[in-house]
Length: 183
Image 1 (cartoon, one colour):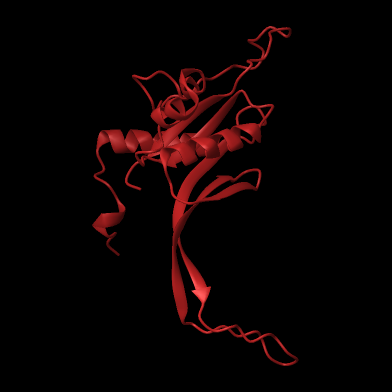
Image 2 (cartoon, rainbow, N blue to C red; image 1 turned 30 degrees about the vertical axis):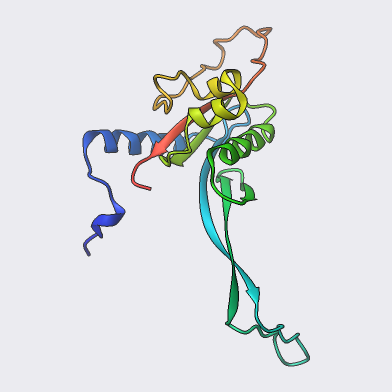
């Protein structure tokens, strides 16, 4: 069966390297210090009933009319830590860079013991270091790495036993972003 061309980007060396990077991240063992969180967003259409639904009664399920009145659109950010079974959803009025930055801060706050949070996400224009810098300034925005490499493909690795036992833990989290192509 042929794969539709709209679903797969050109399989060049860069695409394959990025995909291998993402697969390597997915293979990481569950870790409180380096959680892996997959992030995406979904637009949703807001509906209002035109007719009141009929309530459930003995022997019949509740019924809703398929006719509705459109009430605009919204966005839902979703993050999933697959190996831990955790998920983070946040509805927003749109998917602006500032709302995305706020969402990332909420994810970071959920991992107080983490040194590095590995984010796997597509390459939407708002999924970048600039979103955090514009919203919170360079100190927070810098957590996504240096400006010249806003989407690092290699992640910092700490070997167990290589750190002094009394070394202070970092006072901030580092976000390692792993971009998926073609989303």
